[in-house]
Amino acid sequence: MAGGDLFGWSGGEGMEPGCAYFFALMPEGHALQQIGERRAHAVRAVQSARPSPVEDHRLHLTICTPKTLKRLRAPFEESLKRAGDDVVASTFGLRLDGFDRFTGGFDQSCLVLRSDESTSAHVQNLKDAIGKALFRHGFGWDSSALAPHVTLYYARDVEVPESSGEPIDWHVDEFVLIRSHVGKHQHDVVKRWPLRAAA
Image (cartoon, rainbow, N blue to C red; front, side, top):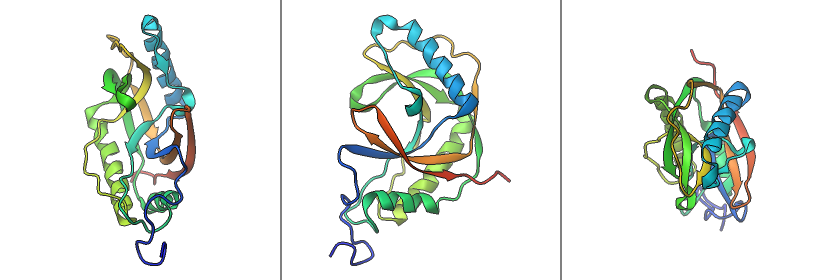
């Protein structure tokens, strides 16, 4: 019976139809403003390519996407929230220091702001902590390495500007669970978790 044992849920219950879920960092304040300025600069440089900019409310840095096992300890979304509740991690500084070209969802090319090597390790550590919590709640194990970045726009032909300006320093003090309505340009923040002050 569903819910009758330790892993009693098949994985689909409690999952909004037409939605995808992921854990992420979302810029706010000065960091959001700076990222928006870099996006505007990059979009102006490629108007002929008809870029599709990522709106302010959807700017984010993806940490991880849950991998489902056959049985979870609770309905899907509730299992994700319980995993987030278990994560203990410290605040950290993240630097975005250059443009790059990536391939996004549905094999679309996109322009991104990437993080520098020295601060990428902090994002990886948080991703590993979330991954362990997800595994304890019945999700699949994810050992992949991150290439932390914030997507600015999608286009068929992405041109990488020569300069991204001064690096953007972002103080990360929380992570979030996002419910993305696929194809609708809509992100719902399901829950936020503060990070503890660095020692």
